[in-house]
Image 1: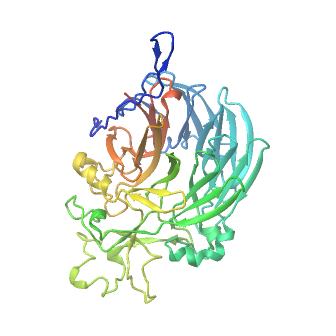
Image 2: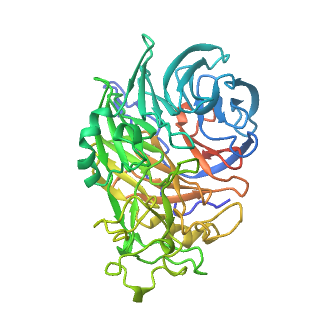
Length: 515
């Protein structure tokens, strides 16, 4: 495991005021809050085989950890009262309906998003009591519910329903967002049909609508949801489409879609390693664009301002049925415009950008059958956006640069081959997940999960436009972090903040404590 590097220590803040008695000199003070950051490994839970640990949720009232176990179509449950020795409890089985995708906890209730056996059919959200796993309620939601979360006030359960097509791409349900009102058990499922008329304008700003014969409402695939601190708004990542939607929870409407545009890899601060066949780990600038395409997103309010943070993983579509749809190819296998990409530069060589995978639906700007621009999937970074979709900060090539400097054996790594540089031609480290820990409203700590590198990077984002790197979290037996869960010190069984990491490929969950 990588030890702490570049740890920042901020002086502990005095949060109480001295109170004086006019009759004597007695004074009382509030103890200072420890805002130092140094996460250390405590234990690992082996949930099962590959794919068995995706997303976890924690209930502070029972000290139970609930983890999506897709191998067994269950929610695995562990008592982590002693974080060093988690104790297995009886799981929640949802296999009678389908497969679980996501789990969330609030105030003694655990919500589970379950896709139907027929993925294009309506899904379910089951709500259980955390104390005894008894079923409290169930709700019908949209097709393929992929992520579930509670609003901060607990009044709503929100669900991102991806609505993925079938393997033949002949059935493509609308992507939707379901709002479950807990008080009266009503379900409002919102689609994106109101934006069909805005498709061209959104595409001009970098949004993508590209599925065969799909309008915008069918093409969008809601991936992840984050909720504002005041529970008034939610933001939804539309990964394949390269956008984020904003939902007004007061009016139960989708208020806006924010196209995220493109990242220029010809700029020095955005340099990438674009080849897995160049026999070197080196960042260079190339005439290529990246699509942000966030997977997980999170939000935080710092000094009264909302920020949305995205893990810019990227994702392509590959459906190999008949007729199906395959949306990517390598640069060496497409025809390039000779003016934009002079043959003298030999861009299609393996050691240059020939191996790089690109989107086939973008780049033929003049419609003549060759590619005038090239667009790679993902942005190999994390970004911080305003509440209205303006880019405030992007980490550029900070992830790749930091990994090369401090853990070069994990650079664009592929754990199955235990080899560096294997993912350079795809999406690099693939930032998959993000989570924020608020320490006493004084420090805001960001965790960024790198799926391919099997690492979690820790940053201080107290100044959101100038994040500071703190440390790497990694363990040789944990592969592909899928879910990140931050537990505040006041909710933790140890009295210290925790970060709990669910690793999809290794089927493990590891617990780290802030010491």
